[in-house]
Image (cartoon, rainbow, N blue to C red; front, top):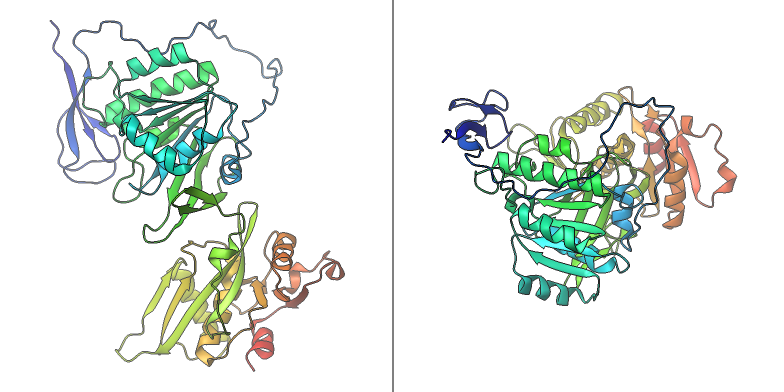
Length: 455
């Protein structure tokens, strides 16, 4: 009998080595190598997905006939937006997130609402009774959603061959185990092999497959890094456990944009779609407060209005503090230097704290003007009216720079009831100001805004 072949795999990045290493040469982590069996001693023709398609041959690109297949539209408009317009036939989608964030709830909710499709929900973590309890809580009934509790891919493909589902959901990929690999479920080699088998099934049958994946303590998807390269789409389901709001963000998408996001609210009856994100990104106040400004950002094709909160106070403990939540701390340092050099504000002896309300992480440079005005508002202790918002980038010379998609930003501000929006003067070229009910105030330098607002 042949000796079983073994190798050592890094549990963080999937790097393999013929011998044990203390430090991984790929990711630099220590004590992450574990020994795994990579070849079974006696293979007895395990059942995996087999296709009956003809052998492929090279084709000239001009010979290839392309027809755009219709996507599967769900009732969840947030998921449709994140996927690029709906579920693509034969796609492999990986959804990752922290434990307890709501991944299984989201996918079960999708499975129950696809009323015209046969959905097979395979769970390796929960029993049928547990899934039934969650379905009762969701208050959504479906005659086309079927549950299978199984961890062996051999048995899963047997049921798939008989059942012929329209959509397949696996919860989770770390609990699946292939008969081709003898290592434990959740190991690097098992996750890679199970994903390869599922991908082969999805591409050859045309059935879309959703994989639920765990994440590591640093926030990345558990398993080998090659897992993200194998799938078509990677979605990140994130949010603060202490709040009810969740964000579904696109990390990779072969069929759409990677800058889209969907927002949900976790309720006792499931996840509610938040069609107007400003209801959670802008806090409600009884009276205007200093240090608060509303900025306009773009997340993919979606314009959002977010609230920037600043607090500027005298530094009583030596070195001034610079703290930001949801905003790049280095960019905050740059904007503070611009205010001190170009605006004459003595912020070098002040503590500055900045927060983006709603828990979002903002990278859009169009937020710069809102950040600057909120800091100066707190420094001068003068409140900015709630009916004003900002959409412009700030340069090192104190100039107000133009940003993209200004029409969408202005239209969103008008729809939400804002009375005035400050934009760059260089954004108004070709813009018909008379078409909008909202007042558009073009500015070229920061001192023009301070002269109007902070008096």
